[in-house]
Structures are given as C-alpha cells and as structure tokens.
Image (spheres, rainbow, N blue to C red):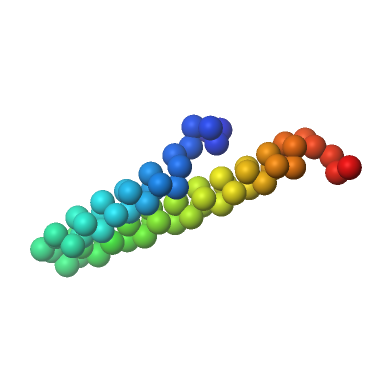
Length: 70
C-alpha cells in the first residue's frame, strides 16, 4: 500500500483514545487490560505514521526519492 493511502497519525491517536475510553468503562479486568493493550498498539501505529510523514517531508524538501546530491 502506498503512503498516499495510509491513515495519518491523528487517525491512530483517535483510535487509541477510543479504546482507552472503552477500557475505562469496562468492568471486566481482563477485557480492560486487552483494550488498553489495543490502545498502546494504536499509539505505536501513530508514532510510526508520524515517522513516515517526517521522512516523506524531508524527502520532498530534498527534491524527491531519486534526487542526487548537488
């Protein structure tokens, strides 16, 4: 999948927050733990998406992936 079709970091952060809220409202400890783990995984996806966006931005500033140093 190309990065143009990738969800932005904001999307993953919102999903993480959604699952943290579900965990906070869950009465079953084991389920609550699983929901918190899912939220952590979404946080990691947000970090990775942010890194990809940063690398792409730097690449664009340098003239693209196939640019050669001057």
